[in-house]
Amino acid sequence: MLKDSHKLASALPPTILTIFGATGDLSADYLIPALLHMDKRGLLPADFKLVCVGRRPLNNQSYLDFIIKKSGAIKGITQKEKASFLKHLIYFEGDFEKPENFKALAKILADHDLPKSPGAGKKGRGKNLPPVHACYNRVFYFATNPQTFISLAKLLKSTGLLLSCVDHNRQVRVLVEKPFGYNLKSARSLNSLLLKYFNEEQIYRIDHYVGKETIQNLMVARFANSLFEPLWNNRFIEHVEISVLEKDGVGGRANFYDRTGAIKDFLQNHILQMLALIAMDEPYNLTAGMIRDEKLKVLEALEPFDRQKLSSRLIKGQYLGYRKEVGGKSGTETFFTLKTYVNLPRWAGVPFYLRTGKRLSKKLTQISIHFREPVRCLFKGCSANVLTFQIQPDEAVHLQINGKIPGFGVQLHQANLDFSYKSAFFGEIPSAYERLLLDFMEGDQRLFIRSDEIEAAWKFVDSITENSQFKKLPLHIYKPKSNGPKEADEWIKKDMKEWWTK
Ligand code: BG6
Image 1 (cartoon, rainbow, N blue to C red):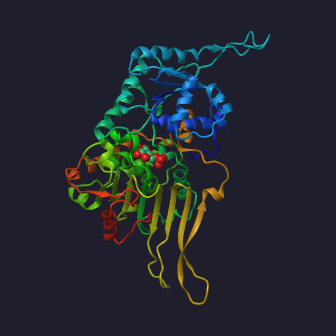
Image 2 (cartoon, rainbow, N blue to C red):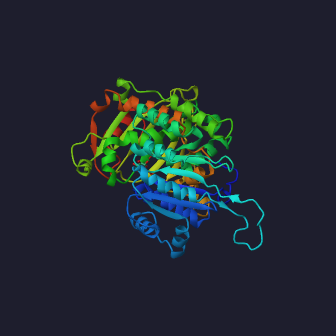
Image 3 (cartoon, helix red, strand yellow):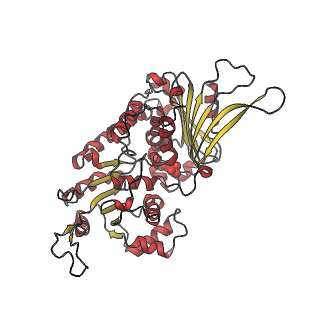
C-alpha cells in the first residue's frame, strides 16, 4: 500500500506460502487466480513455494486442474503458465484437523531449510565457502472455517513450524480470513488466543476491500491534494453515503450467510473500513501503526445504537426467494441501511448513510461525499457538489459541479469532472488479493486490520445485532433485481435525501 516504489517481489527472501483450505471457494475464486496472475507478471519471490493443503486426494497437477475447473475467475490459462505455476506448487493431501498430518507437513517445510552450498552445481567454485542457508520465510494462510484457526495455530506451534530462524532472520506470519469472530466477545477471545501463538506483528487480519484500488486512492485523494482536506468537515460536508450493491444472491454460502446476515458480513468489516478511511485524520506518517491509530479513533467514535435510535435509524430487508435458498423460514437480513454518526469534532452532526444488499439490480460500490449547498446562490438551480469514489466496477472519481448551459441567459446544469481509471491509465489493475498477498509476503501490515480495530468495529455492530430491538424490527421483503425495499427509499426521503446510487 502507498509504497513509494514497490519493492521488486523477486527480491523478496525465499518464501513458502502454506494455504489451509486450498480446495475451498476462496482459494478457487480468489487466492489461486491471484497467485497465477502474480506468477505471470513476475510478482512472486524468486524462490517461492506454495503448499496447498486440502482433504481431497489430488496431486500437484490434478489439484491445479481441479481449481481451474472450479474457479470462475481463471480464464484462458496457457500450458506455459500452468507449467510455470506447477514449479512452485506442492499439493499436500491431509486433514489438517489430524495432528499426525502436521508432522508430514512440517517435514516438507523443513526440507526447504536445508543448507545450500553456493558452489553447488558449479565445478570447482565455492568449495571452501560456507554454505548459504536457504531459510524460507514461512507464511500461513488460514482460509478455513474460523472454528479451526486456533487448532491450526496450536498444531503449527507443536510441530515447530512457528520457530523463527535467528541466524537467517526467518519470518513467520499468519493471515487470518474473515469472519473474525461473530461478536465482540468472540473476536476478543480469538485475538487473545491467536496472541498466544503469534505476536501482533505476525498476524495479518484481512479485509479484501482495503486492498481494492480505489480504496487505496481515498487516502491519496484526501492527503495529497490541498483542495479537499480544508473542506473535509461538518462545515462543508452535509452527509456521506456508502453504498455496496450486489447483484448476486447468497449462492452456495446459504448456510453460513443465514447465521451471519448482511450486517455482520459487510458492515463490521468492509463498510466500516471504508468509513474509517473517509473519516480519519491525516496520520503523522505512513507507518502501519500511525494509519491504524487514526482509523481506530474513528471506529471508537461511532455512535452506538440504543433501542430508540435503532428503531428509527435502521431498515432491514430480505430478498424474495431467499428462504427457498436457505431451505426454511429465516429472519436473516440480506439488505440493510442505517444512519450513524462519528462523534468527533470534525464530523459532529454529519450523518453517514450506509447500505448494502444482495440480489439487487446491479453491482456497484460507491462512496459519495455530499457537500453543503452554497449558503447563498446567485443563480437559480444551484446544487450541492458531490464527490464520488466509485470503487467497483469501473474504478473512477467524479466531482459534480454546477455549470452554465451555453447560450443566452444563465441556466445551470450539473456537470461531472470525471477521472476514470480506464481512460487515465493503461494496463491491468491488480486485484485486491494480489496486492494483499504481496504485502503479506513482504511483511507490510498497513492494509491489514489490527486487533483493536476489529474489536471497536464489533462493539459498534453489537449495539445493533445484540440490541433487544434488533429482532423486533420489521424485515421488508424486496424483489430481486430491485434497489431493495421501498421502505429504504421512503426512510431516506424523510431526511430530505435520496440515494446517490440509484
Ligand atoms: C465478502 C462477503 O467478504 O465480500 C460476500 O462475505 C460478498 O458476501 C463479497 O459478496 C463481496 O466482495 P467483492 O470483492 O466481490 O465486492
